[in-house]
Image 1 (cartoon, rainbow, N blue to C red):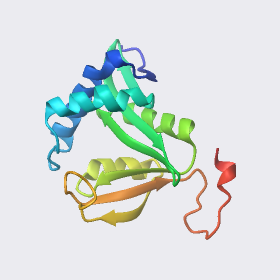
Image 2: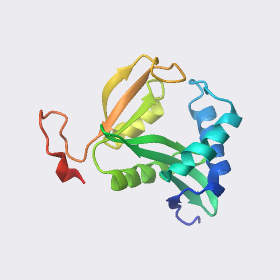
Image 3: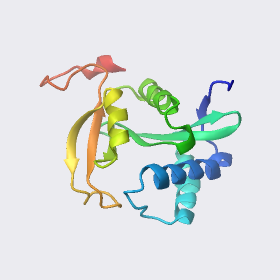
Image 4: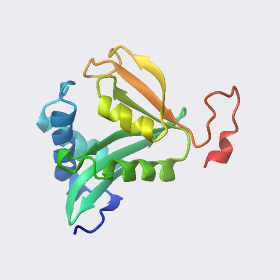
Length: 169
């Protein structure tokens, strides 16, 4: 029986393993959206730009990185920028644990984009309380694939004109 996965902030030493998870997931599970950059560029971006933010969490199983997420915040919302689980580990609760961690770390609201054709991701995020709030034609992303903007709020404020979000932290 496997021990439960652990979660921690990624370090530079994790860059190659994070890139491996990202690329394996994108190529196998999101194959309809062509990668806009070479594998080498993805490795460089993760090593030089993504990991140094300090906002990347890895899921680890018996010493092996099996999932990752990257978070950020701007003036409009908190963002779940990337969430990828290695294809061999999909369906085992790793993504759920990462989303729960994002909700605990960021609070409300959390926004994310996914591709409209990524039906597995759409089902996953909707199951975790995210609501579609806008649709794009693909002109706003590097892959030129139609996307959807999702948002999660701790309290259901979608139908209210005004909602006190200060209670959401």
